[in-house]
View 1: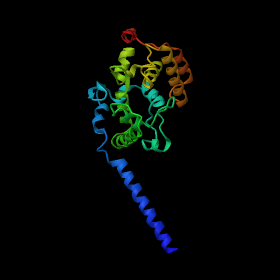
View 2: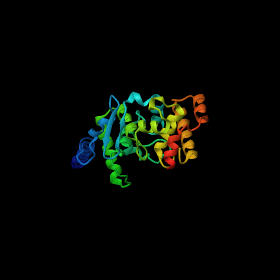
View 3: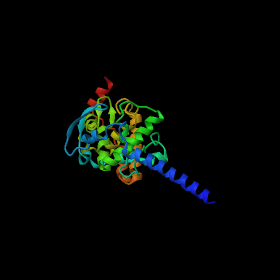
View 4: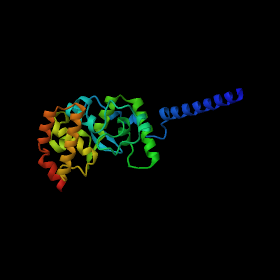
Length: 244
């Protein structure tokens, strides 16, 4: 009996050491991952021109300049500052294919650090590990800002500053609920949900985002009805450019 207990204790200790090693590797080893410190430029305190090999050159804006309507739309449909964190994806699976909510905010940001898409299991695991590193280095407010400034909205459109100017000739903080929901709607699939090429799909997706904002309590039912009744509101120059 004593020998059995010793064997069990040894086995339990070995398992604990292995788990501790895996934990430390997940949290602290980043040599084979993208440099997460390089994305600090996408969480600036002032409007800044930034450049990255994966997303090109664009303009990054501070958290406050994103605007409340756009922040609420992003939180509702793409990435929430209050999610459990990168490790939640390991235990709850990959949410990228759900209609509204994707993976945790750190993992969503980490995907933009890999220049080419991949469905390989190793890539998913590397994205998770990179998300953990991002969680270690940045606050949730910074990560939401980084996401907003790196998000792809179509050819030569990186970040919500360029997207808002292109589609509405406005600063992000000036967007209405309807406009903010449309800009975030484009994120899911910029080509498929293009308001210039596929206005019916863009309208449907925009309204899904607005409905989700009502469910989250960031928009009242009355304001949502008005937003859903509004036209897409894309400026003529955006439509002309897309058609060329």
